[in-house]
Figure 1 (tube, each protein chain N blue to C red):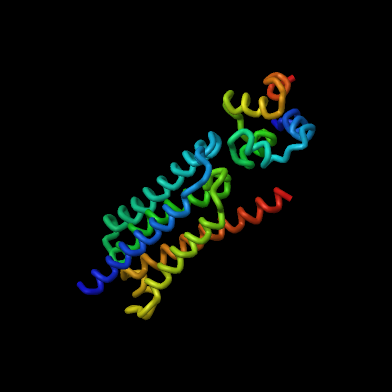
Figure 2: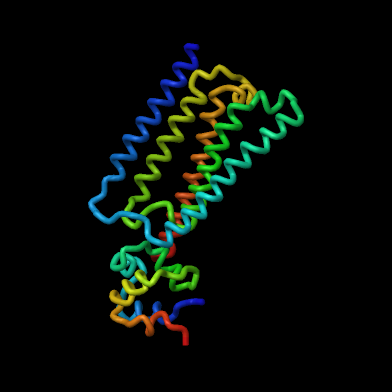
Length: 173
Length: 64
């Protein structure tokens, strides 16, 4: 119970912290700082892909659990179902980033990079600081597995952001 | 289909894609997508681009 409460406290602290950083970073001098029409269309496609990914990642293990009734999926149940939401988010983010629809015209990409790095750091800390697991199986059948998964997904988003920034610099030259 | 008329009109005004994007209130990637024929802009954006480049709709967006 103590571990769960400290985990919950960590999650809430992390969410509040990231939210505060996001609020601070979203302050812009430009009054009209919204997505343009092409970006809105791309984000619609990205939302669909992310949502479909999340639904399939919930549906397939759920069906397999019901049909096969083995202990395998039950052991990783929590990580699978919560991880599927973050996988859907990652799919949305990567598609939006790659098609230039993640940031508005006036948003600073470096600030977003910093936020993503902070999220990764917080989750790596949560997963690996004073771990109560010894093997990967123990990691992914515990709440720390969710932190590890989130760190991995946000690393993918970070890679997409960095690659896109490099591509933009080349095209701007 | 690539919009070469828009690209040459932009070059004639010595504007980069970023500068044209700033004038029209869109991202550079959107201007690039329009010039490469990857995106069909709405009439509102077409008009905004025409105003920025001092051209008419026919001159920039009408297919010959």
